[in-house]
Image (cartoon, rainbow, N blue to C red):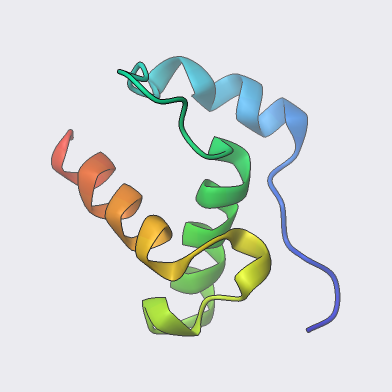
Length: 71
């Protein structure tokens, strides 16, 4: 894999008010997880094929499911 895709700080600042608040344990880095979600969807990958640099594939998948149900 060449360079890791990450959302910019400006992009994160625009969408961060829409993230749910953390309850209990602090969440894994939202920027890294959201970038992983975008990378998987954009490239048509299966969740388990997500690069390790975005975090565990189970975390990326669970966060995607949880956030999509909030809509």
